[in-house]
Image 1 (tube, rainbow, N blue to C red):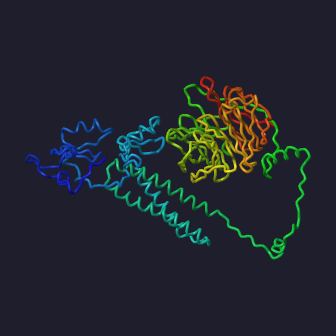
Image 2: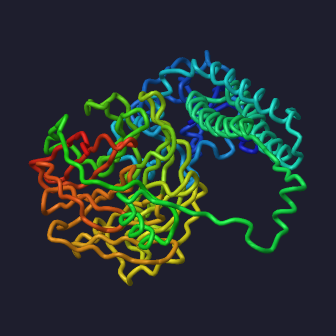
Image 3: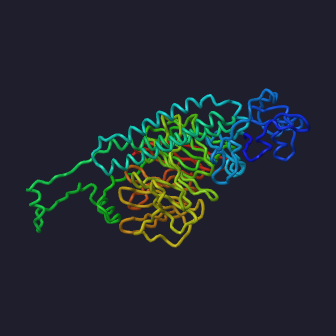
Length: 546
């Protein structure tokens, strides 16, 4: 990093003081040790003056290529650039010395050791600065465009709802303020900063741009909201004022389904009625063998276009085609991902839990060729399985928590199913997973070592306990569009299909040892299953046939 020259430091400020009867610029390393000596060389890369004693060690102990010339030909001492803490890690308060290309993140020495040891592309900043900062101009232009968008939102008065407009203007104003502050600092660093400072500033610019784009995209999406008012005419108001019932509703069921629907409604305690479930059979379409040295898959789900998103125990999220061909796109996490779900369009949510890390990452898969982190929710519990409850909330299974299933919203707020009395049991890692049936407000949990599947109605609090010889060490579970529950039965090498009312419909042989995770496509036509047993790991894609 560039040497800091302070006005109060005579040794550094008076660059042409005489030393031993000779005048000239001082050696920076010697100056730090209070040993005055004249500099013979100047490193343009590090903005440091060097004496002959330090010149050789400078190139040895500071990584990267160094552009070294005569001190007499160097520019005057560089101005001090106060990085205002941007060149230091917020967590450890240490200087950034590494850059992780996998995570697009600057790292101090502690971060590199704690979070990035297994990353494939962890580079020293000193080496990367040799590649130059030619794209700083491009980033500056992008900043100006983002600022213009923020200003446009501040001055947009087409919306007549004053409260909503004030909120939108406040968000846009904050975005503009952040851009203005970063832009002014960028000008200073770009003019007087060292190569290292410019590199760090470039990464800061990228992060600020991403944050501003998210705010602006949110404001743009707000423009599509439609506000409607319903005005009752006088006749309807008159009818509503009557105290006696003015009509009653008669419902007639098709006799073919009346018994099943009545049993489901009695079980669920709700008027919501899923489609009647029928047993399915499987037709294998694609099998992919996974080598022993490769990581195993911990979570799977289908994207709306039929592609498959997966996470593995090598801390990666990746995408596969509908023929299980791995696409050249992935995202690497700092800790172990446990499960993944697609909750809207190509938006995915991934549970992260390992050591002290407890989080849900919200990402977006764009055209199958990029995976972008949109938001990280830091939460208070260890999560494993995840699935949508609605557009704003997820249902998660937990471990090392006395509440085995919880709700987490898009802001990271954790809440509980107050109507459900879960058993007094705290599951450990890999002992329980779960899913949710929206049509009947039911949480499904597996208890691996109890060989049991539990169904909890979140409205009535009713519990259904399902034990059967076909359910042996149940692991992952998912729900099909008709409300069917599909459970990985690890010891019976099968997938068990269960109706929403808790009846076993069929047991499906998947011809693999120890199925671990399962997912069903949105239209209910396909199923994907993987296992985790070393020596026989597979990934299989099936057609679901009714």
